[in-house]
Image (cartoon, rainbow, N blue to C red; front, side, top):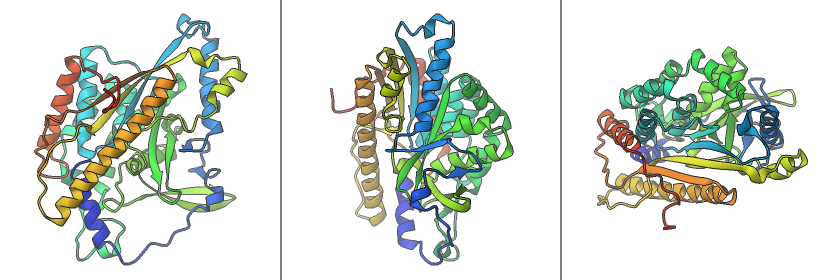
Length: 397
């Protein structure tokens, strides 16, 4: 994302001093630990998850029992999926695109929604549909940097802290918009067979963690609401710039802590192909023909894909910012290729949207409300006019 690397570099140079005492989860018990007393609510990327596969098989079996012709297992079925990337303030583009898509009357009801980093904030609203468009627009157009982060004093606090900035303002915003009513609505849609996933990075494990947010919401208590909010905050917490989010977990009758940070450190956009390895074989054992299941996947990249020219001043921070921006964009293209290959192998339909290179940011701060409104309006207009979804990743034309 843009403007974020400045804080990353400053933090690497300045953060030192006292480290907090931790009781980290031992590696051998990491996968089997429970969070807030809840089990089977997450999976670790790269490790096939029996609980996630069982959940998907259960969804298909329940649909098989339905009398509705759409779920006749003798015919093909197509599921609409949505994957929302990171991008910090650039999330305003995705928010605008979703609002404009609703206004066009062509926005699907997504079977699965995934979100990471700023996409994790967008994902619950996108999952719940046009009824939450107003809140989504407000979140990405009505606030500035001071409403989202608070920079610590460089001399007094940074040497004794784990980050440059405090995310207390962002926590308050998340508490305002992610309330008990939203949690209830997510749980309701989960019960209908739809799924919402958010990604964080477990920094100890060095892995992406995929959270089943609908299952968390379905617990329906204050702990569930707290965990739901914490996961979203963690997914958007850029390490060094922002403090990590700690989660208390239980394993082998002991209490430990886990350190979670921005999911975008692991992936800029994600789906569940690596935690669902072996699903086709498991479906076949249940008598379900996986070849008749089709996917149309829509990917909103809250950032740039095309390279663009920008003269870089001969200064340390400017060079670092441009370097990290370029690396992040390259990472996002790699993630898009993975998702495209999965979709193509599944005989699915790949659809990609991203900020055009013709839009040059005029942001004067990390979260510039003027620039965010411009991005929102850009995404809104493109979707309202009928977005020309890209069918292949960049470089494959």
